Image (cartoon, rainbow, N blue to C red):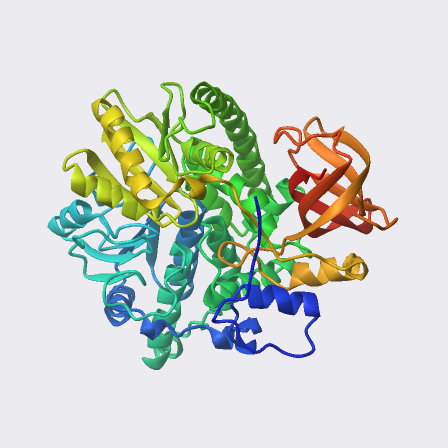
Length: 572
């Protein structure tokens, strides 16, 4: 279903010299002023606006002065890995004598600062635990750490539950009473802000001058911030666009950690022309593969090394893991598609869909849930065995349905059904006992049905309108590529139009390659629908209504205009 974006009430005045197509796009994304087009670091929201930042800085500064052992406990995804590497690098550069890290193995310990992780950390006798991208729900874990004599600083961005852990300090823009204007920082973004505030405190205290330490340029860590922010699919509000744009610029100028360079190389991408899409779809999956199938330690080490050869070796190992992950995911998707076919994609399909298979891999269920969500156009939870008694679930939502709040409502209506859960508006994780699966599936469907009507369960492709024939140019495609960064909450431009279909063929076994002519004109345009064959797009349609992106196709040193098809439907 195609729908056209319209400027909202927040759309404001934009510079007159903007290309009219770009101005239309920005207005449809509700940019309020020209300031929001300026992605310079001077426009970042200052760190001191985050609640309890002063406590966090005091904890860290005291640990540095006393030479105490600091342990970073990070999540096992790309956001956690980049945040972990950033915290270790920044603290070391600021003079910390003993900084270590721990990334839980998701298959042994689960998510967050659990009592079991605290016991594992305690073997190394840290004085201060610093969480990155987790901890806001770790009530028992923080209690265990405090009982062991550790102090705890939580840095997180996930939504808090009804009870906060009794940490020494919590920095999270989403905690109650926090007045930080951007609620969409990723975990790595929160860690970056904490390091900015710590550096300012140490500078004012004369720390660097007294000890002869070169004050670190923390902008050099923005490559990590950009990768983690895009990988976590947080909305790219203006503050996040600044972080991503600045990080991308550093990567494209070759000023990034060796691990990102090596991961880009393993993905067949070259710094110089990377976009946020490349970070999200090419580099992040390779980094994430470690945490999904094995242990994220390999990913963190790849981001920490300054040895080019070591980074290349680790990136190649991560690439092999990613290929293995893709094979596992493909098999699980086939099973999920078979389950959907048995249910039939019609009114019999639950509005809140739960899928489970005994053979599924818990490291990949989030990807399967996302793929099924795209196909079924409704919230999906994919479950895999955690052990003989429990299941782990990964949930993906659709626009207009806050999935974490939906799980919270189910938990409130059915006390004791969920062991634990947490997440965002669009993604969440949960654990429940196997015996509760059927009851939970019914409760989840009932909760989703309270919020989504039948008309909400149809896939919608939003467009930025039609283009004039004169706008089909490589120049405009390059302008749009550089006008982002595009991503969640600030979507890449998509246009629509009616075309006559010329040549057509299948390439790479699954991609539909087309020659399209704008209806009523003779100009031929190259187009491709990635995975078009799998999506059921028909080759024989003579005329189509298409939603597409203007793209720059680079092949054997030649750059040309290409339309990337997002949606096709026949025109009579």
